[in-house]
Every structure is written in structure tokens, then in C-alpha cells.
Length: 196
Image 1 (cartoon, rainbow, N blue to C red):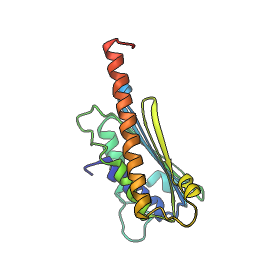
Image 2 (cartoon, rainbow, N blue to C red):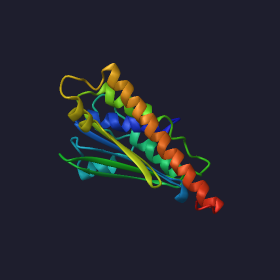
Image 3 (cartoon, rainbow, N blue to C red):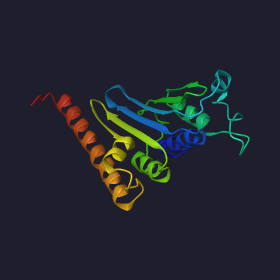
């Protein structure tokens, strides 16, 4: 895939197909240690140990709509191409967690892409599910939790109403800008020797 955010979309769709009601997406960027970790967790049907061991095989899938499953194998390949790794933890009836680690400075690194648009699309197109999006860059981070939004908005206002979509979009944009600006300031301050 051209962007890792598209992998996140694909893995999250797998979670939805597995009956997940809560999907957590964690993006942790660590420029100082040259690491990007993407973790997608769900409370879906989960897999047996045998299924979890085979999920990175492109010729294995739990779907009945086709005979191959390329999402997780591609994600694994893209992580390993950079010198990173992919891990799968799953328990039948409990859920699944997929963790991919990338080395961003590697020549084969694929851009993260528009992760905010991916999260926004997942939330607005799956109004019957909850999502927790956590984005961290070094020491700066933010979390968007649709369960908290529902508690504030009440039952009358839907998450895919135009006003709420715009609010989520603005929130993701502003919070991302904040953590990236602060991280850049910290790196600049550290390399210049200027401690303020």
C-alpha cells in the first residue's frame, strides 16, 4: 500500500468484520529513537492460537468472502522491509492486537499518510462502534475517545452528523499540529544547546 494509514483502515475493517464494538488505534512516533509503532486492538471474536499463528500467511483468512487475506501479511512485510517487526496477540472470544514497528529513516519506509482522515472515516462510517485514537510524538500525545464524545453529546446527536464530523476533523487536525510543533521545538532546542 502507498500509505500506512491505508493498512490501518484495512486492519480496522478486519476488526469490524470480527464483530468488534471497540477498536483502539495507537500511533507512537519516536523521532529520537527512529521508531514508529502502530497498534490496533479490538474486542472482536479473536482467534485461536493456530489461527493467530497463520494470520500473516496471505493464503490464510478467516473471511468467507474470499480465499486470501492480504492486509496483515502486507503490514508485516512493510514493517520488516524497514528492519521492523509485526506481532499478533489474540484470544478467542476476547479480541486481537496487532502491533507493527517501523524504522522511519529506512529507505523502504512507506509514509504514514493521512491517519486523521482514516480515523475520521472509520468513526463516521461505523456509528455503531466505538473508537479510541491515541497519537503520541515523543513526550506529546492526545487521545480521541468516541465513548467520551457520546457521553457529552447524549443519545440525540449522532457522531456522523455534519457538525460533529467537522468538530472531530478540527480536533484531530489541531491536536496533531500541537504535538508535532511541540516535538519539533523540543528537538530544535535539544540540538541547538539552547535550553531556554
